[in-house]
Length: 166
Image 1 (cartoon, rainbow, N blue to C red):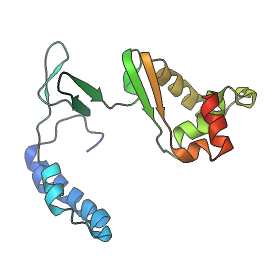
Image 2 (tube, one colour):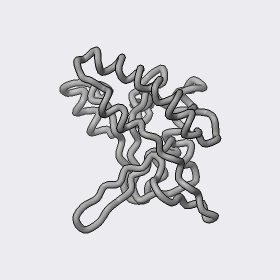
Image 3 (cartoon, helix red, strand yellow):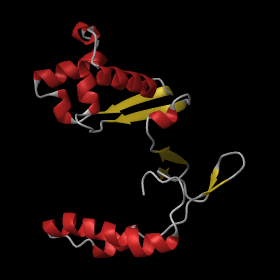
Image 4 (cartoon, rainbow, N blue to C red):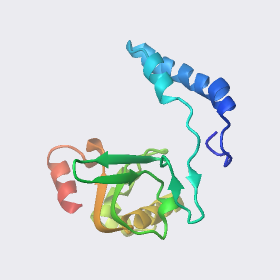
């Protein structure tokens, strides 16, 4: 489902995919005494993919977009991977710490702090992660935010030191 580029048919979603996701939700939430049934069904209601215009813009709902609406204005916050943003510029970017074998930002903390130990020849995966972080950090024209887990910064004096270095 995640790696198939074609649109998922409504019948496949309703009869196969959504029920399997409900089983997963029930296993996760029912164990905590929270019924997933009502909210889960509403959340998993079928929505067709947005139509793309010739200019490449989407009409209708935006995929992976959260719309913040204030009384006077609104802003669309689009979630995407760093890979998909290569070559683009934004007014603001927030990089979220993710986990794939290790925590992404925590692993790069020495490099982000400018420590000399970080300049030693890095492993191939660390080198790729550093290049990815460079791409992510150079997208915004006005504001960059790193969303880092508290435990990645450490505790007490260590946390203060890490924050100051960042």
